Length: 376
Image 1 (cartoon, rainbow, N blue to C red):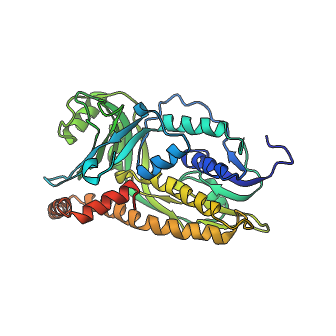
Image 2: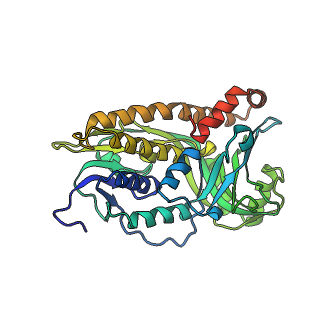
Image 3: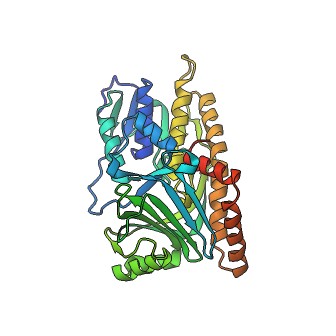
């Protein structure tokens, strides 16, 4: 526990990937950080989550020396997106003149790296309960209790879908290609893992809420047979190698991302899923959260020496910048989700034509790729 004399510049509530990254970025700027990380019971279940991290996210994690080993961060050299008719879109790293479009990162491996770095950072102190600080940064995720405590409205638009996540061992190597299939039933993504020549993929299957309990309870053979059919046998025979996890999907945004605490010189700020949620179909959720904390750390670093980290002028600058960056991504993800949720044949034909047009769009397609990679 901190001593009575200890004072903190920033108290970060939430010790996930976003919270720990923010702690390390602020500590690098010589700010004194308290990171609230209550002791957690060890789960009996393997964490099956994997994140697609873009070039910008990789750069910040590498700068903190927290990038996982090669076997836990697989480069995506190409991406194939298939519609429910014959439309398809392809991206590849070579045409974008980059090393990789993204990296598929094993969540436990990244969390372990960040936890280790925090443990050895003298500017960061792990605390079990929130402590007094000039600025409270809320990085607790979508179900943040502090956000509600501070009176922030969180406007949630639930999708009629849940995501099922798991891991598969595939007969054929994935070749570093991320694959995604849009169908009226839902959106299936195979994300390459285990290195460029690996045979393992992380699965994210977003499908109608009513179908989820059945697929979670189904036997392994039925489950993998269905995924093999949707994936058009792209990777051959599939074997389930992890449990299935599920969560509801939503789009959400907080009405305020910063504010003053009552009767004090202290302030609060939101980052990551505590501030916004988007559909996972483009894998941008964590990238947006890491962009949040990079922007916040940069603005605090560049402040006049006499300004407190709690200065609302700085925090409102962060809010404006990040809301502006989030808006087009949120609209695009919501629009795609709505478009592919429609089962009518005329709509299928329209979106099929749209995919074909986008594939031939040249500059527009290139702009979208750079946006997703964090290069714009």
